[in-house]
Length: 337
Ligand SMILES: NC(=O)c1ccc[n+]([C@@H]2O[C@H](COP(=O)([O-])OP(=O)(O)OC[C@H]3O[C@@H](n4cnc5c(N)ncnc54)[C@H](OP(=O)(O)O)[C@@H]3O)[C@@H](O)[C@H]2O)c1
Image (cartoon, rainbow, N blue to C red; front, top):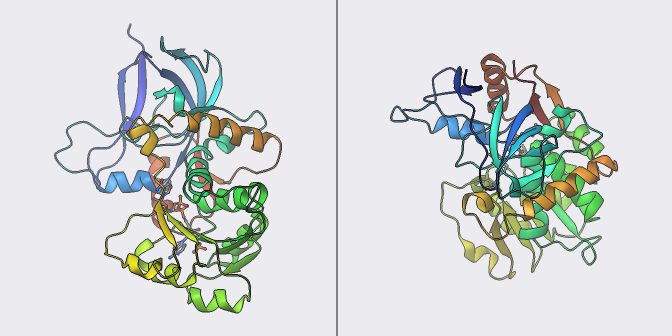
């Protein structure tokens, strides 16, 4: 009998998730076949789901954060072997991790941290890649030279903010100002190392100025870029840099940054895998580095909620929570039911 893999797919945005079996795929080229142990849910899952239409004939398998064990490796692989524990976000152009097994290019996979549970590890890849690339590749923060400079992180308590605060504090040694609106999200940001917390439900410029600290050399926007663009342009220090990870739907005046010679740059963590850039392998090294930092206790897992096994019902519950926009840290599921 042919071996099967189980997947949890969806046809269009308003449909329910359903269990679908497929023949087990085989690993070729740079691909690893991974048996999934745990997954995490991200806002990108709900965003891709919202864009599914009647025209999609095949059920879409969402999910871009997983931890698992290598079951097979393609002929061109050299970084992992069968039996290795790995964690990764994957490629948005390929089927995701709401499945018992998944094919993933080894160049975007890291060795899993040894000291964490599967769920604690599964929540880390997508947000760590995003935060690391934003801080060190886009904002070009150099931990050797930029210690003591100031960063404003807008939306500190979410998945990306929770790791961005830790990296900005422990690796870059920056002065970290972040935003959070609930008592518990403020406490969480403080626990992760934020030096100052302001509330994004009130005027950011006014609150920042009341802190009586240096203007931010860097701003990392992890929420509504349209809403925050003007405040960021007002707050950024001369020669500072703003990075956003959230798409816009309005036009903005780049001229507002000109007199300060300030810059604006995007971070999209799927660029490297989507466009097969020569820098793609950096995500393998980056995730290995994150695993080491977790094992050494320099940073901690951002897991805050385990919702049980990977099942259509539990995935729906996780989507409903993500859509509130108020989750703190990250939600994980596992193993496959
Ligand atoms: N470009 C990329 O590569 C990339 C990668 C990852 C994520 N993203 C996008 O980045 C965004 C954040 O992702 P995430 O995983 O961190 O999301 P998340 O975990 O769902 O973020 C939840 C947090 O957002 C905060 N928040 C809600 N409304 C806010 C507002 N108006 N201003 C500031 N913060 C607000 C909440 O803080 P309080 O509870 O304190 O209000 C909550 O803790 C999403 O839109 C996601 O799709 C992009």
